[in-house]
Picture 1 (cartoon, rainbow, N blue to C red):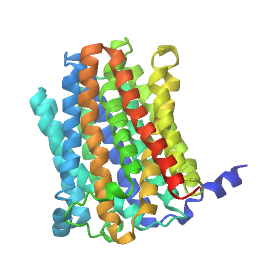
Picture 2: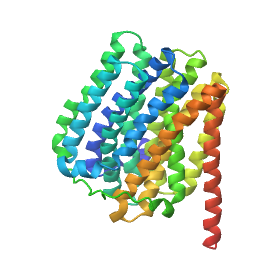
Picture 3: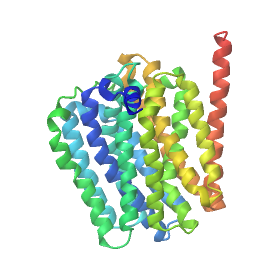
Length: 391
């Protein structure tokens, strides 16, 4: 039984550089997963509205989007290792400043700066994973890499469950987790420096959206769901009288479900029609918000969310690798991330505002509405392609 599972997953075909970059991704996920959960709960306890929390979270995504326009120049000048080292230093300083001066403007500015430097690394690593893979192992490679950062994001909120959010320990831990990435990076310095950075086009070309519109619609909605859950699910739960520790445990359960599913999702994505797979994952994004209406089964909702959210990114990125030429892959990946982060930018703002007006039900209905429209587009597009090809 175990040998059959091992044979099915088979990570041996994954390029070794992907594995080393995934180590850095793991610790980045732990640091950011803990920080984002902690900051949202603290903001809610300080009386910030959901709309304000949504805007603060959106500033991180705005920074990620902005990175797409400068990443080429920075990487050309100082390389991947120095860029990653600089990002760790600046993000750690930003976290210290946010806890030292806890107000909406300072939180928003530092979220933006953190996003810019995080985006530079993210775009390069996503492009690299796609480039060193082929259609036979791309799903597995992306699933492996995506699992690394997601398990980090899952472990981060677990610390909230252990330590809560009150006192000096949570703040000290948040800063320490940011900084500890430096010695981790030093340990894999040689392997990171050996990574041949793909030359990213200095001019963003959004024409790729016309080539594969459903991919970009799906990942835009994925961004809305992902950021809205991360930024506003804690607020939703506090409104339902859940404790900060319970919120931390629920985050962990959901994201851990996403992590353990990725080896199988990635392998499956290499074997079946990815378009149909994306439609299935979007359908799952319709289900989990509906289940939030019954808080007694909320753990089922977060498990479905975790699987759908992590898998949607894995499958759409793998599908993109199939649809574009290798020579165009780096710029297409940058556009892919910009579109994803556009969803992460608009999602918390719109969903947070909806919660301000309608309460918790606004969280549920706004996410369902976005997902339904994207699913409808995907189904119509699929029928159109079949009729066009005479299928």
